[in-house]
Length: 187
Image (cartoon, rainbow, N blue to C red):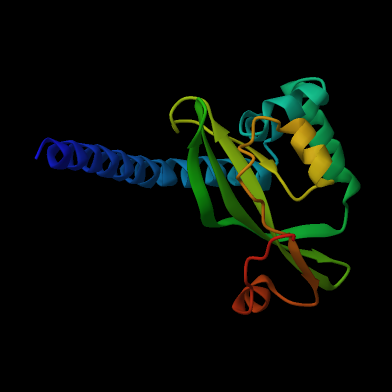
């Protein structure tokens, strides 16, 4: 009898912990999307100071701080004359999980650019980290550079967070590419 009560208590505790985690990640997902959408809105408006507030702090430090990052982004955009971002938006939130003292997520960034009459569409993956229980987020594009470079910039990433592969095609609109798109991972 005592064993049965103990097992029931353990089950109830585990079930409530799982339920609370699901409720937490469900309540955090709209905040992730809001922060990512605000970041991309700042990018579209070429407001790189605001854009910097949503970017990974270590990346900002590597570039000499937020002000230098904003200057760098402005120079990068000017050097891409003739390239137009026709679509840049968030896609699916693939994963949300607590890890140590943070919440972490992976979400899609869907982009379509037009360059000299050619359309290039892509799905890349943003990794976000929140150190304040999911209220504010900082992101980094996990598909830029090598996996080793990414881990150097973001060593706090949960090792169990597998980042999907980038998908990029030339000659298809984003909607055409997404019609047959499936998330894939490196072996």
